[in-house]
Length: 113
Image (tube, one colour):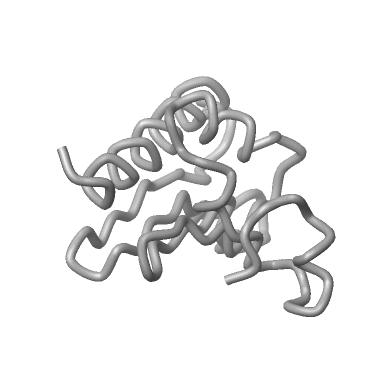
């Protein structure tokens, strides 16, 4: 299996597993959706719906695969995503913390771009 397909599977497995572990409850009309655009290598777990009088819409996670590397663009949780990616065969040099300033990425221990 080529690296891109493997990374797509790792991301989708993570998103689906996270969603099933922490997913929807019957007490709220907020739905979670895994969105996968394999053609453009973009993946999200999204919340959408109503909680009382408030409309909820936003990403929980957003990943892109750019130039053979997984870019974590958004992580609105306290979950250590990088540990789970590396446990599933993703090299730390293929992980970019996209939400970290480009000038600070060199201190992250992961890829800079």
